[in-house]
Image (cartoon, rainbow, N blue to C red; front, side, top):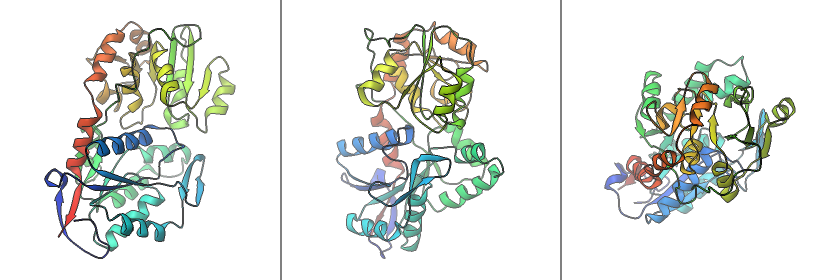
Amino acid sequence: MPVGIGQAGVTFFAEDAPHHLKVMIVTDAWAPQVNGVVRTLEVLGRELTMLGHEVRYVTPEGRFTVPMPTYSEIRLAIFAQRTLENEIREFAPDAIHIATEGTLGIGARKICLRYNIPFTTSFHTRFPEYVTARFPFIREEAVYRFLRWFHAPATAMMVATPALKRELEERGFKNLKIWSRGVDTDLFRPQPDEPLPYPRPIWLYVGRIAVEKNIESFLKLDLPGTKVLVGDGPARAPLAKAYPEAKFLGPRSGEPLVKAYAGSDVFVFPSKTDTFGLVMLEALACGTPVAAYPVQGPNDVIGTSSQAGALDEDLEKACRKALTLSRDDARSFAVERSWRSCTEQFLSNLAIEAE
């Protein structure tokens, strides 16, 4: 039955649930942010709806917000506890999933614990590494301690890859389950006759332009052609000033983003901290091979034996090798990774409350 504030029921998993579920997704990450977390949650909602379920998002949109310190593009909702509780009462969800550890996530967690409502969470971002990159005086382990506290009461904490699951288990996290990522191969597709209008080869980066993404290691590479960056973030202005030969196109979505992927020769993923890297699958679906470091994220998405990308501790070597790879192989690799199977995985991880 739907969650009732003040009613405690019996928890069971969604693989045994009715065909129609009301799912509430609580997230501090939402439009106008453009990143993998937002795209993942948007597609999740679309796929759940196509499967016959009803989805309600709880986001910062329409709430009183303040900018996140050092990252003004991210808005944090405050004074939202009462309205959040009212939304849960009104929607009466069968399942609550808390996707982020921000102010809305903390508020939803508090309500669920107060009324003994089962909930699940997910780990999308290496928050400890991001925090210490901006505030070096904060210890990484202190942030992991907060995350263990946040996720501990969840019936399941969902993570994108087996490698991340093993790492977090070693850090003391419990109840971890896999929820992988997919790609929309209808939207993200090759467009061979529409290259970007810059000297080739074109080396593309898509994502947040921020210190934790290690973008400068890409911009420093001695590569022919043109480096193109799609996205926004606090490091965009200083990097654009330091590397005037690179093309900073700003944020793109939909068809303009597809054209950027498909019109480039190699997609460069310099991050060493991402838990997955959805943008790599999007690039591959457009037929663009990937160059990256052999770290978690690229290792899980591409692997060391795939012909869809090149991984190397020397990012320049990876870039030059990726330039020789088949665009058809890149596309074929992505086609095998659908969002539907990922959504079914998400559903099987949910905990439902019943009488």
